[in-house]
Amino acid sequence: MINAGQVLKSIRLTEKSNKLSSNYGQYTFEVFPAATKFTVRAAVEQTFKVTVTRVNIQNRKGKPKRSRRGQLITGSDSKRAIVTLKTGDKIELT
Image (cartoon, rainbow, N blue to C red):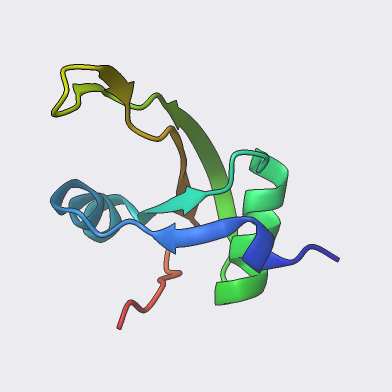
C-alpha cells in the first residue's frame, strides 16, 4: 500500500486555492517530485477518506534571483497537484 507521507508534503492555502476549493471542490497540495497522478490520488483518498475524480500536476521551476554578492542563484523547484473531488465531498481544513 502507498504511504501518504511519502507523496503529500502539505496543502497549499492561498487566496486562489481557497476560491477553487469553495467554488469547484478542487484542493491544491505540495507533493514530492517523484509523485505521479495515481499515487497522489491514492494518497488523498487514503488520508482524507474522499473520492477523487481528477488530478492535475504542475511542475514549477525555481525563480532566478541575485545573491548579495551579485551571483545568480535559483529558488527551489516544486511540484503541485490540484485534486478535484466528487460532488458533495469536502476536506475539512482546521
